[in-house]
Image (tube, rainbow, N blue to C red):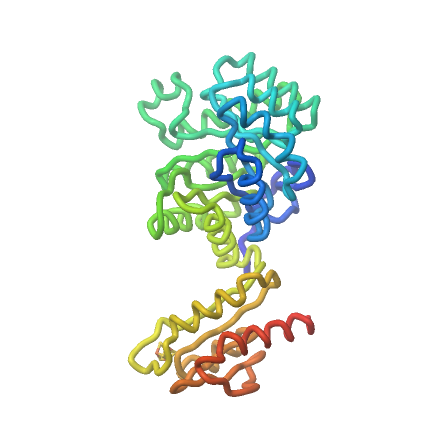
Length: 355
Ligand code: SF4
């Protein structure tokens, strides 16, 4: 049973809905220089193919601003301009047609400027993400709390949300991100208990490789389990395609979004008589473009194979250098070790046509 989601109001970033009854949206951020339009669009295309539904681009320089119309025109998904320190870039990005802007009021400066940005967004139908990050918290809150604790992040998020609502703007979502998992969870919980504003969740600066993935999975996973989160970004020091894949793995593991292939594979032990890690890698590679929700079990021997295969759409139960290919719990044919990945792909394609 997937977690019961907190009721939030729905907003729109271009044609993508966030909150309410919309699915939890997966987003990412390009790592290219935004002004290198071709590279940026190629990366957006790859991310879109991996399942990314919203894309944010950094706009640190004049040349990045100039590139926005081309990017917006050719991107298959809505584009959000990431603005820091330079309020003029927020106005100019909106002029260039972006679907959303992300600002951290903590580094924009005076309240009056934030209000003018909000009024312009309202006029142009642009969505806003109010970002509250431990690294860009307002001075008065840092002085009050001494460090960017959960209460300080929460207070900043409430402060700006109330202002935007008072200014008659509600097409916004909030992100409260700290790199400390527990503070992050706590601040999001505090905010979720008091408002129906959609939340963008993630663990900022989670880092690289295994530790970044684990940190993100724990932080995001706990929030999702508590029903919190309307859009997700996994932030890794890695190719953004990895971020998108990890985001789907987290959502899939909680039964929230089932897009793509879920592979259940045994951890292997002394009974194994095939190179199972190699088979799993080959199967993963062969099935990477399958978008339909499918569960595949790859088991090293018959010990757990029958039970797992029964739960899966398709599966392999391996013996010495061969495997039984299972479909909905029933063995359908025997394949050699070298044929396993290809045979599974053929069955997946047949299975898809029967769905
Ligand atoms: Fe070992 Fe077989 Fe279990 Fe895999 S399925 S861990 S090979 S007993």
